[in-house]
Image (cartoon, rainbow, N blue to C red):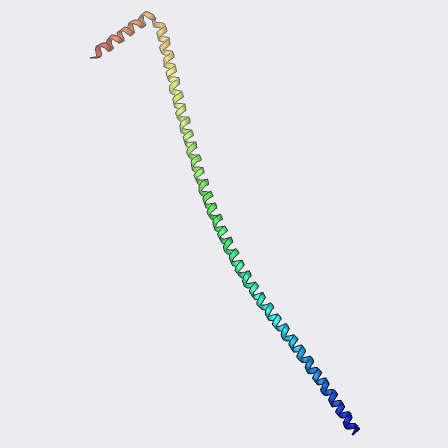
Length: 148
């Protein structure tokens, strides 16, 4: 009987230990489920953050592409302005060369006229005043006769 009581006590303690192990296992399972739930929440948050990052990256990429396009347009405008400035410069140089040539021709004509005036002045100084008056009177008579 003592052995049966000892054996029953032993079985009872084993049953109590088994119940304590089951309770402990349940607690660990609850904790594991809670950690799994938190991990799922973290994964969902990470996926959401990744989606936001991708959207932000796409938006920034589109903004950078628009900036690049605007820069290319400005570069094209600058090149067109440079070409127009070069054409204006060439036209100004041509006009300056033309004016310089015209000025040279005008100076040559002026020098020719000055030479003619000096020649006429020299001739008139040799002719004398009486002959000048007679030539002028002859020229006036010829003009009066030619005028109807």
